[in-house]
Length: 167
Length: 224
Image (cartoon, rainbow over all chains, first blue to last red; front, side, top):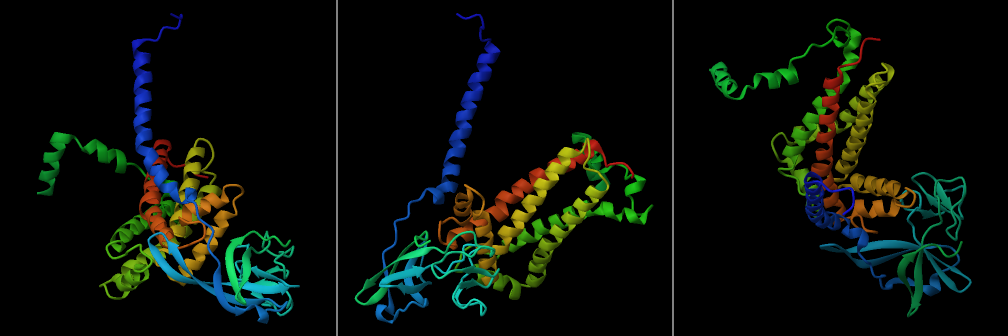
């Protein structure tokens, strides 16, 4: 026995706090896990989506290529059409995401008459080089994302989006 | 008749001290516009609360028709506004009141700032007031998405990107708000609805209670 004897009152205090804590945790844990579920869900990388853009027609000038896929949003499944800016660098196909890295608007190639060889975001005049590199002094803080892209039977197929590997 | 009823209850429950404590107190001369017209600046806090009450009531009634589902949300808003009697008025109250609350809070904050009312011993009430401002902005942000029109959708896309730009935890905040790492859709709408009508109003009422208890406890700040 140590000198610090636990009094009845302290013992009751500790046990009731402990039991109460367990009960509170038992109540809150399911609700918190329920709420944060989207953060912990794993997404498998999407398959390649075939577009109707012939690879032979792609030049070094970026063109907008639309691609449609089935998007599963929890209980809601729908056909969604997204687009990519596709061009060739030598023989290599490159597809960039049109989503501006500033606040998520949609960028256009040559949208700014003063910079016809850059991507331009109309919302806050963000600009990017052809390879997606954001131009210093404009709002975006990073380069445009890049789609995985490949040729399937002569047509462009767009895959999962990832961080830009060109800059 | 009403007096008798009151007396009957009061005799049993002694309710007079309760409402006296809440409602029966003097308004000092320097905050009373009847004495000095310029004292109307002291009304902005009360006006904020008044509009907040309108927001809560009109919001309660709006949920009688509104559905937080991406297929039907816009349709239900269109229906309640154009087909239901006084729908334009009720939605209008909620729509315009939402902006007015922010304006009134801002004026109230300016008044408290320029009269120096935030100084000792009222620092904690200022802190709670700032939290209330944050809750109101959260209510504005989450409520903006609910009509599920183009403006709502793209405003929220931008808003969520702003939240995502927070260092380190930005991406997590984004997913927690949107309910998905890439899609702003069905789960975003239900989440925003839940936050807008349950979570934030609960926080708002708790903070308001603290705000009011503190002001009664400490009294209003003295004249300049």
